[in-house]
Length: 138
Image (cartoon, rainbow, N blue to C red; front, top):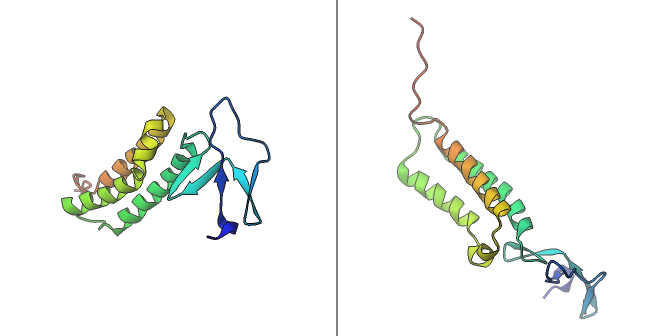
């Protein structure tokens, strides 16, 4: 285990704050107690609210959606299977760790997820199919 890379967080209630200047000493290495840490792809904060997780997740979702959109053809669109595959990739990114964070999902974090989903839906629709051709001059 690389002690230099270790992180620590103190979980506490809203009333009781984290201990000031708390440190852990493991194997002679001092590890500062922080308000948040990243563990297995989830950003955990000291109050189990996951606000930092969703603030970091939304830009990642938007970037992945943009990268996947650039793979699609510009003319003629793509097949329903391809769209379903891309949507599955985006959905799995968004819902990663849901059994852990879903009990603590706040209205603000749900709104962040919905904003990312709405932007993906608008981009996916993108007018690639169903748009009428521009009128030709007579």
